[in-house]
Each structure stands twice: as C-alpha cells, then as structure tokens.
Length: 90
Image 1: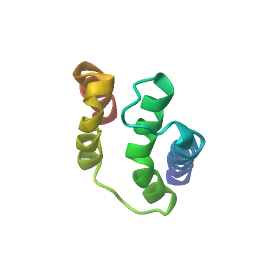
Image 2 (image 1 turned 135 degrees about the horizontal axis):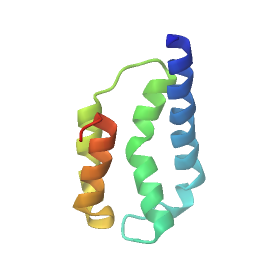
Image 3 (image 1 turned 30 degrees about the horizontal axis):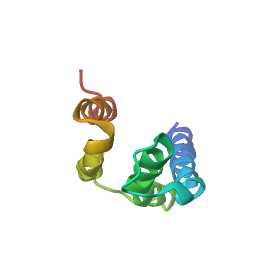
Image 4 (image 1 turned 45 degrees about the vertical axis):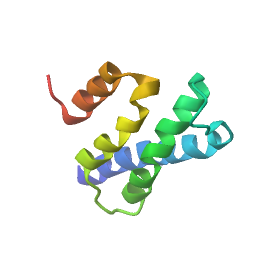
C-alpha cells in the first residue's frame, strides 16, 4: 500500500517539476497573466517536488508559507483555500 501512495506522490511531484520547466519562459514576477502566475506557482513548489522525487522530507507548512509571495497575484482567499485543501482542514 505504501508503494502505491509513494507512486502517487511521485507522479504529482514529477508533474509539478515538469510544469515548472515547461512554464520557465513565462516566469516573470511583474507579469500577471495566467501563464506567468502558473509559472510562479510551479516555481514556488519545485524544490519540494524534487524532495519528493529524491525520497526526502520537506516541511509542508513552510512550503505553504512560501506561497504567500503569490498573494498579490492569486489573492488571499485562493491561498487560504489551497492551504485548507492541503492540510485537509474544513
């Protein structure tokens, strides 16, 4: 069972990392287009994705706190909803 869960985590981590690579040309912190914001989001989480792929732990709360710099682009409500979804909070 653990192996199945690890493969799920690896799939999602690999996807985040690949999205970061694919969106690299859109990484402009002054740009507020959807592609630029998606690039920033993937960029903000790519080190955590690499940690998962290397079977290394990372601090989830710290990673979520790091997304705060995206608040001007995504909004406070969006980031709160994302945090709640990750932490499985109602």
